[in-house]
Length: 191
Image (cartoon, rainbow, N blue to C red; front, side, top):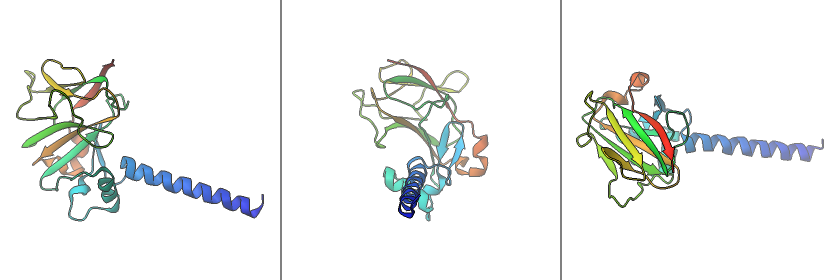
């Protein structure tokens, strides 16, 4: 193989590997200073006074304003409990409970990181308004169509991410993240 052809192949491989690893790191937050709790992922470094370069890049890409370490932590889930991507037009049920926190909020964002508008006007739930089951656990339906009980509207199409923000919570400690009991997101069907 002539030298020029080997050089071109090497450059193409380097570009593909470099851009691919950058996309995985910044696009998905893959493996850098994140921790998982069930189906949920959090980046506790994002809200620190000196975030690492990967957290900065993720925050710049998503235009999020992270919670400071003393304020709380945000958990993100873009897949259901069966690891399938969350999509608009489908119905999901969030069940279980949240870690202890003074207050929590639950919202849905689209692929651009924006809260989708819905004719109902509802954009989020918080811990002081949600109806609990007799055993104290949660059951919130995420659906484009209104449902009885706790209902969070979602759009008719597109990729979705559920965001659970815990304020004044001990959940921001990465050493205890694996032991956190987080709600499950179960797929119920699509239209």
